[in-house]
Image (cartoon, rainbow, N blue to C red; front, side, top):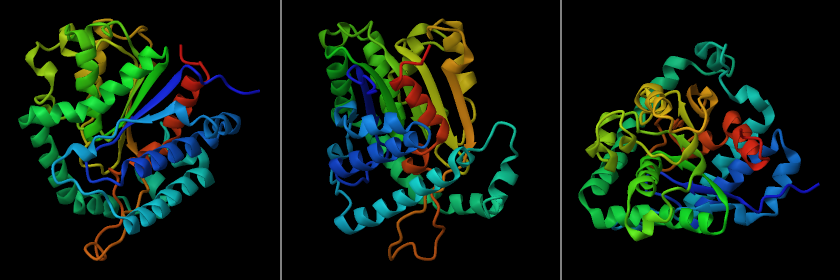
Length: 331
């Protein structure tokens, strides 16, 4: 029996702006999410195969000045690396995930990985990741014309979903997580005509992957910075579920403070529609197996990048929560 997906919308927003072209980015994100779901929900995944309209990308990389999309050769190699992540998820099923009672060191040792070397390798990609990240966050802060263009694809995608009577969720990665936070905040609190009519609309799930929102400097870039801590105007008021995912060795999402900074005060202000703790979850020390695409400049460097979106999109808990959303099981 087919699942009714007519009122669902999964809006995906990427991170750092050095990206494949929009259609290919959308293809890889959609493919990884569907294959993640397929591990435990084959019928649902088959339905998603036939309902491309459930997925929409809020692609913003092309508004960055001098942005050049990745070329065909790189995209082909990237697709192969994404397939490796999907195959690992498929082969080891939920063992892909560091379990609640599992020791992190033992988890990686069982996979033939030395934890010390893994973390050292993550630091070897730190400069490249952080240089891009800092350059683009500076642009977001200092050029409001470009910042408005960066936010616009997500704002428009949410308006379309709400206008069509759909129940949207947002799957965001890296810089896309704080872009999303700003957008949700604006829809919660702005009273201009293009926001006021949506002040009471909500997103069913806000999913943040590899997020820098735990960093006080990043929070200092947001619209909410002008309001007092633990006041309603400090937070978006339109989120039913907020789940955060942070992979071990990810230099962008290393802070483990989401409960203190966001979840606890939001619960105290009754901003979630239930006090149940699964409404807000911070998954940390996750396994991201993504291996970077080899090219002339990195042949002798560490091959793993635990910040990459595709290793996040294959997380078992993410797949199960999105499946629950699509099957109307979220309560």
